[in-house]
Image (cartoon, rainbow, N blue to C red; front, side, top):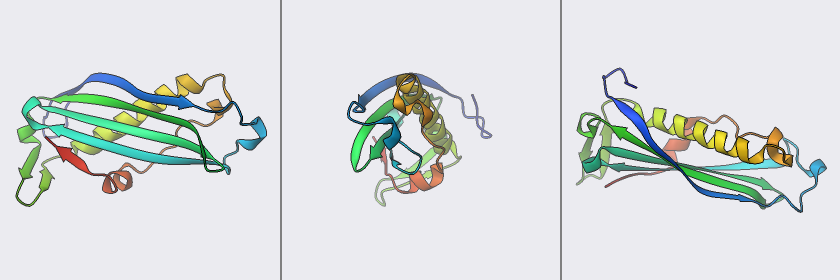
Length: 148
């Protein structure tokens, strides 16, 4: 795949980190769109010397302040040359991107996690509640990007 800046990248690996279901004590009638709440989290690690970006999306399904499902996965992207994508100012602790590649990786990572959760919840009370669509830019603004 390539971005408009002709940056070549690919998914190198997908690793499921955590998947915990606790729906044994939850009744079908308790789970509604109104009662079910979601907590989203995203961690991003840029490994400049390895030309790798690791994106770890996480989701929690919560009913009555109880977590009934928690899932996360790390999706590793190989980028041909990260030096063409990011400019890092270590003194100011700033990272600037020459193209909008991170949001694409975060979107792809949440879609991957959505598939993992779907296959895991199929045939359960939660199969009617896939991970909802989210505004990636809002989520990214609330989470830090780490550079190694």
